[in-house]
Length: 160
Image (tube, rainbow, N blue to C red):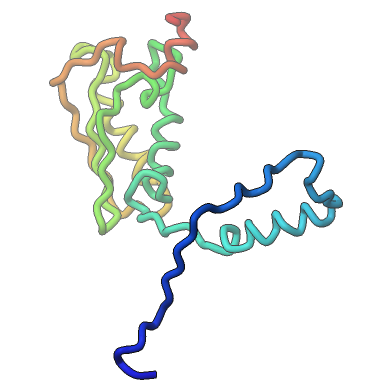
């Protein structure tokens, strides 16, 4: 083959007949085993893939989710809802060194547990496996209001 010879040929046509239409009656009957085998082939690669590793410090990670679970075990003494669903937790930050900082507020500055609640939060969070150190920042801005409550808490209190 020389350099001047074309590597492909062009064929011109006047018309092409339409392809045969598909009908349900023309479908090939498959047994249940054949259908299942086809699904297994399709899912084989998907099922073999491992999920991406989630950092323990990110939402979905072991430490972060453990801290959230610990916070959901602490209940406000005046309102029968946990402090997380009540909306008192403004943030949970987990550092690469597994230090946890919880930013929270209370329902009012004159709350009777204003002195003891941050200490209880710190103790519960520091008891979560993997947490090296826990710190609680108590803030008053923005002020807490009932709109910060989760739907579960509102339902529990009959507000929905």
